[in-house]
Length: 602
Image (cartoon, rainbow, N blue to C red):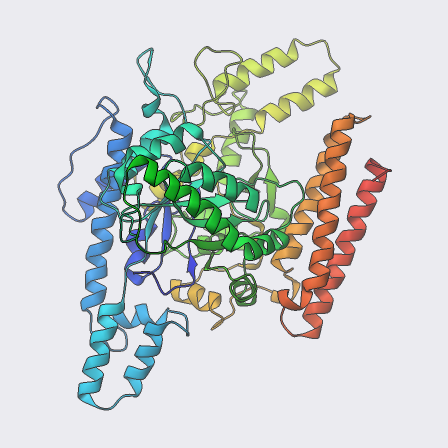
């Protein structure tokens, strides 16, 4: 059975949503857990077992396959706790103030279950009321407890000095941990193809469809464009694995890591999915059936569902409805605003105060990630303050206690992290020995020291919120909100945020100044291309020039698309449309100026 909600809560950081399902799945809302930090999961499992009086047997790093086992046990515990709470919701009275009515009140107005409840309230006949109550109780479902693996985080692991086999790599072990759990939910794969990981999925029967079109575990792909969805979907289909959902995310207007496209904007990308949805389904489905037949596996007797959802920068009910009604997506993802909902996310008091005060200039795309991928960050976060203190003390870099992002072998045989003290000390020493001007040396050293330990910083808040020991991790918190946060400036309840999503309430700060989600993304691309051009050595190579010309052409095509479709993208208000078109014209002019200076011929 599928949730009647129109939105889900995507993964946020490492620890911000690590136990979110315990609190909101009982109310029918789906969310996503990060599978990066098995050590954090183990600490929280001990905490929750103690809190609820449950037996706990620790899994140490000396135990065989400890990462996968920790993940399995954590997910099983989350499932058990969420289901226990869900049963309490189900059994509560159908009267004002109860958990069951709270569940129903948060549903969208058009949800069949909410309509039944409204009918129940108006019905006077006791027998009819009883029949409706029975239907309502039978119809409520728990939100999904989904999990996320960022495919780029796939550290090779060792036992002593001996490299372990491929299946013990971080991503593959996380997959195994989920596969062996009792969850009936989805694995969200993000950051592109990891061929070893994708080829490991068919090792677990739970990911295959049965004759009735059912799955025990499903695959969701987070994608940035149609071509990526088609390539990855076919790759998995050839192995007999169906992708149940494609989550389209803005390249830049999102939280966490940002993966810029070559100037392709979210609106045109969504249009391609809308028009090409049937082709995507048919192409991948035919590939799947052929693979299943060759493998001797069950062929489904019914049509298998395929969902398309969108996320990244959504901030108003109008934008939410535009995505559902015009682009025909099956749901939307709302992440960053929920950082201001204590019931949903693990955010410590200091960081949440920073979030409430954050303005547009405080939210920026940074180079702090050791993955060398753009990363949305908040100025003045406590991890950044910690990094500056270490730098001023003459000890740049982090102690690197968890090592999830180790990848560099410039100075060592075994990979280390570019945010680590070990790497940054050696790299700075190397730069200082180079025969280059002092000013260039200084800038190069500053660039090295930008990297920060996000694999710890993105999880620490979960420890702080629950009063757990942070001796190993420290108390610095990295936070990764999208720029949308600038218009959400106060702590709100779960009900308030859900009512905002469905248009029953408006919690935006100064909504008149907030740009449309598509305009904000375009502005970020304009800034991105300007900064990228400034960092490009002159004169450009022919290959570089061609790349920027293509980038510019794609952005111009996107701008023209928005101009043509403005009536479908904003509400009927003349002011709203005029403002959208005015913002569009301003950004088009800025873009033209940038390229006229950097690439005169473009």
